[in-house]
Image (cartoon, rainbow, N blue to C red):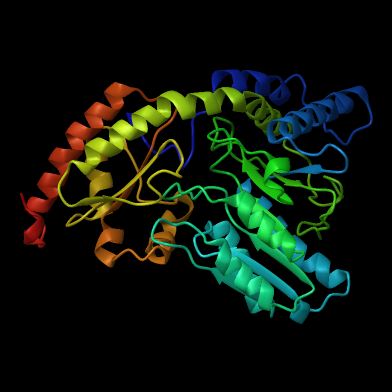
Length: 395
């Protein structure tokens, strides 16, 4: 199988698994226990936090890494935790605002919608045809707002089309008006430099399984100035912000991923980028196709293409029959079977949305994978168009 769905998940590297395995058997302690077995587990957590802080260049004085079950929980904690803490601190809902881009992952948009139902002020920022947010639209909202406390949530890189936002510029505008900034960096980690200090963001979400680590573990990295209310209640783990016995093997795996980030970035910005360019060039040679997302400021492994006159799900099935795994977009939204809100926000037509396909390379792919995919894709698209009711695309 040629796996080109690395934005959905990635295989666990052997060296990551090797570091995790002892904590599934011999070193099985609960990190909250006071005895030596527990202290050993606690030391593993501390080491992972240190690795993550180093990988993200976080300010060591007061910043925290809060381990969660993944990026979805981390995003919920950032957004709901911020809103509920402001309420607890005496700020009314009328004086609170959450701002998110219109192309955020559902794990950001759904908490925002939930807050809307509770009476909070929530605003959504538009993007251009390439999926790029304009800081002017954010400044317009902030300049006209009288809210006392504001959170801006803008993803580092889009999970569907791969567009990389100008996050530093966005953070500068937000901070000019005293707003806090959260960024979902789940797709960016290991593919591009993520420097918390340089970006000047207040909260960052990361996930292990998007970068050759295990599923079921992520983290919310927060600066010393951020105050959150827990959304899971219990024994007060993770500095009182995320109750529940920590997933020590998963956390160890995430820590190892963080240590490997420089190597991953070198691979993505080198060989993987070259493969992606080869893939995009070949796909665009197929008639009636278009590249979605920013042509340059995009993740080094992302090729998102619309094939007019073809249904994307039919393409997935046909390619799977030829041993190629791809997707139409966010794996987390597949079960909902709904039109991509990202492509809709970018202004694509229904036909362009229905014929879209996301191909995301990984460090395990090679030229043979790309060339075989291009060969098969041309034949499959031609076959599907031949039986399509859209006769103008037949060739």
